[in-house]
Length: 200
Image (tube, rainbow, N blue to C red):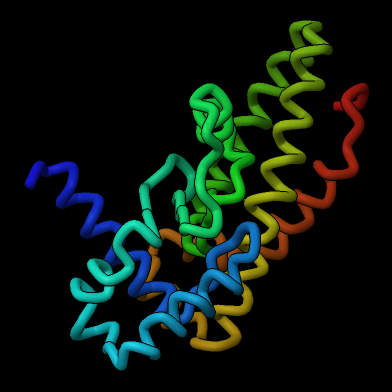
């Protein structure tokens, strides 16, 4: 077996364990349905996520393909296959509008870093008089906030409410800054969502 195949299997098992064992909801199109269906599949076969993860991953086989993507994860099921057109697939994978693209709450720190990077690019374009480029960056910021960072923060809040702040930080130390500054981050998000491109 090639190292990349082994890495894909290990990553797939990790994601299945998080969804079915840790009860994490994938953030994306019908994420809670996806979680419930995976759990139902496992329960129907009387399997234990902690002990039988390799067997579960094998049983799911081509019905559930999981791949790491920048800023998220591709979870493709037999119900939501990729489009047949290769160019459309390539474009959708590159720009993350695909219905098979999901995130998890623990990706909020990376989304926040992307947010900060886009702010710098927006400011640079605006200060150099490149208003059209600035408008595009502002739209990217708003898309990132609405589709990624806000939902990730909402899911993070739910995870903290269910399992406690300490549990979340122990499992995801990189989120401690996000958790400690969430009020300010949400205020920042609200300002950028209201921002118009002609006002810096």
